[in-house]
Image 1 (cartoon, rainbow, N blue to C red):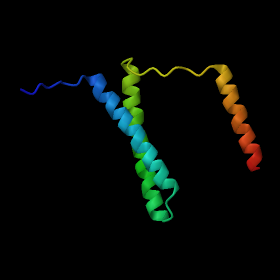
Image 2 (cartoon, rainbow, N blue to C red; image 1 turned 135 degrees about the horizontal axis):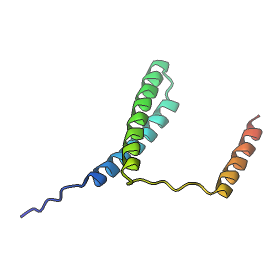
Image 3 (tube, one colour; image 1 turned 135 degrees about the vertical axis):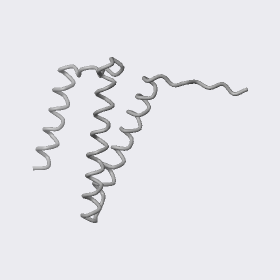
Image 4 (tube, rainbow, N blue to C red; image 1 turned 90 degrees about the vertical axis):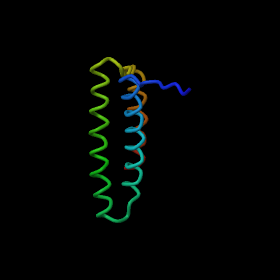
Length: 92
């Protein structure tokens, strides 16, 4: 006999959020490497829609207390800022 496991809402939303992150990353890569401007525009529109869906899922999970990103420590923020200021100055 096969036993089934009904997924809880939290498990479903976690799975959807993970998939949306992956989808957004894929569309971001494809749109940045696309040579055809019409196709690139379409890819960017799809990416924007996917990001909106990801944001909605994230918002719902956050509202329910199921997804609580930890705030960055000030030292880590400063280190990242310094790193990208260095990269920016190298590109100038």
